[in-house]
Image (cartoon, rainbow, N blue to C red; front, side):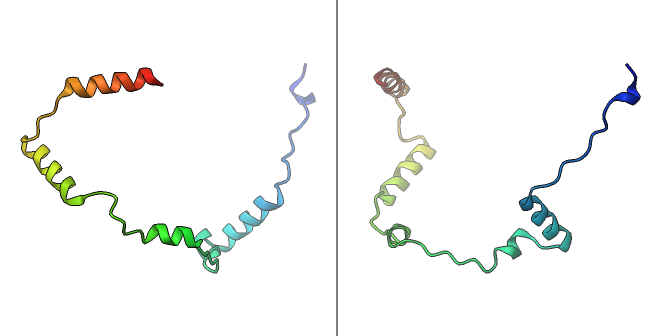
Length: 92
């Protein structure tokens, strides 16, 4: 077998999407600039979620717990934590 008999590999053509992307890249257009004119509107439900002020967490209590943990005043029962983790694993 001779190396000269092997067929030459020809490059395939790019898909139209890749061709357009390559043209934009050549012109210096950035994806950010391409999206500059895009407008997005959020649903009313998402807008309500973003401005939710229901205070699901008691931040004052959370701060107390954080400071107690940091100062070492809050005892941590590692046996109780381990027991709960094992119970949860076996309940799956």
